[in-house]
Image (cartoon, rainbow, N blue to C red):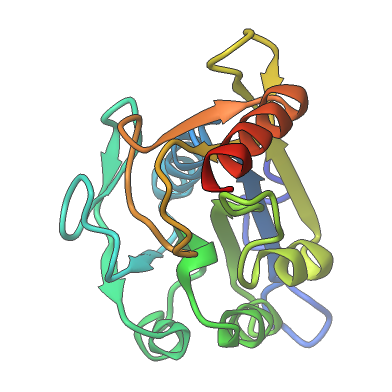
Length: 203
């Protein structure tokens, strides 16, 4: 389990708070949002001013709240663009961001600015898309983060640890919102087999 390196008010020599970036990544159904909510709730218990954001397109469970598959939830502010987070984070000391893969590439610079300004930035998102390719700004965010936690789901086919999000439909859209009706977590062999079967159907 991730233990926060500092929940106090540690300062740099010039009095500026110390900021950093944490990335929680993995496939669908791996518990990313659950872990994000857990960390944000601990920050709230520590009485740290916290602002939480999610992309406005994610309305699967709730228009505003971030909601995990286990139905745990926490309030958030839906935003259109990554730069909106800079404008709305104000004097917070902790910034949480869910579904980071759906944001534009400006999210990387936004997170760097927030961390450089002494904020703790916690992001959760899919590291790979339905085709098993790096998703949106996630690879760069993982590269610049001080802390990266990769979570695993359970393969819906064989019960092994799963790292891939397999899309059950024929859609080739990069972004396709859905849950168990459209996606299932798969290990590498089951993911590869599923992709081969889909390619055979397409040919």
